[in-house]
Length: 423
Image (cartoon, rainbow, N blue to C red):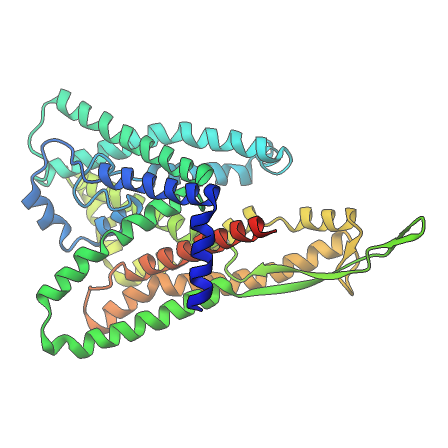
């Protein structure tokens, strides 16, 4: 295994194009982490640390920001506005015939247009989200009293930071390897590991050893389960019909179409986080004012403070978005048409509509398993907190899932690039 690893590493370092792509990712993420360390003006650091210490809501927001929210950097919004804009556009793609035609029938050009609409929608969303954050943080005493002009400058700076991080993510997707947005979130989660480990080392007590050992075993089991479910797939056998042209016979070969159990990857978790954080952000914003708005805020806060309702909402959103994202990324109708055009068929299934129904049935069952798996991993930290009363892994399940999924996808794409160059 070590020999194969070093052989692949040698191939990566010796190939100029592949080496350039990886170095581009490293450089882009370094620029992002540098910008994420630059705070906006007027931050009360002590009050910020006190506010973030036991705030699960901002802990989840910090995941989407790629770690930029922990010190109120110019990147504090992270990729959150862009993800929200992408969700809105994909929902519109499902309900609007014109956008659906643009996405499915116009190919790469149509997807580029929808991506451009998402970028444009990111600007007003980032402005509204930035304004809400600044008002909330000022009411909490985290931001010092600023003039209207200084507030405007702060909003412009963090909106520009959000657009910059969106641009960096798209550059990574185009010139690097893997999905840029996922890589940014991945880097933000991984960047917190050194500080978390050092904090654990400082506060360690011998009496905690059994608990930490149990958590360690659990993390290894969760990692194994995530890797297994991410790699699991259902092969559908496909046979190509024989065709005679002149004196030669073509086709007659058999292959298979792999459908992954977790076909949607990590995106349902990211989408669900974006949606479930929205009402909490509104509640925190309204809570800064009195009167009827505070009553609404208290109701929303009480709803999400109840772990049963919060867990059920989170699980349901992950479940729904798994089916939603699978429906967008995998189209059984197009697959059935392409098989029929190429003279291929599934043994025992007639071409055309029966093939589409057969693949849809399999996809629905596999997506059910994938959705239950993603929902369970997302709720695992909440379950642990309820059983042990310890909030140490309050956001651990989501973080582990994102890190492992992105790492596996990155390794797969690197292997694909290596295989392509070997051929």
